[in-house]
Length: 198
Image: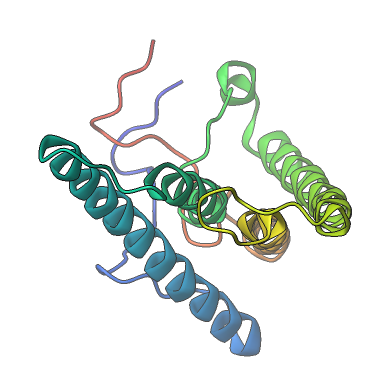
């Protein structure tokens, strides 16, 4: 069921993300949002510059020996910084065929259950990622070209899972205390006008 434009989507927001959460929680949310935005922007720009520089370098007869490893590091950083960003802006994938057919009160309860379970899953993945990084660190492996410890490239993984878990936990809290149904702390349930349902 697609909602009309008057029922939809996010609260008014500016070009820059500003948390709708009160007090210290809102300040913490804003700080994480700024860090994520900077990490994502820098990661994408560095990957583009690195790839272009390597292409030009190959064209003139040589190659940047650490280019592939640097791009691998940046892909991991962008991926795991991006999951928190997607959760904050309500841009995660939703399987909503059955969900949309439910009455509003049931959808609200289900949204709280979904966000709590997702938050717990993210925290569990964070825990397992820390354990994996500890094992990799003990192995003493280093990247062949850059000669840095392999575990360094995975450090963003538990951070990304933790931030995503926090976002889902905050979304659950927002749904508990607010009347409306929220996909994230500032995005209301609904569809954008330009989205196409299949």
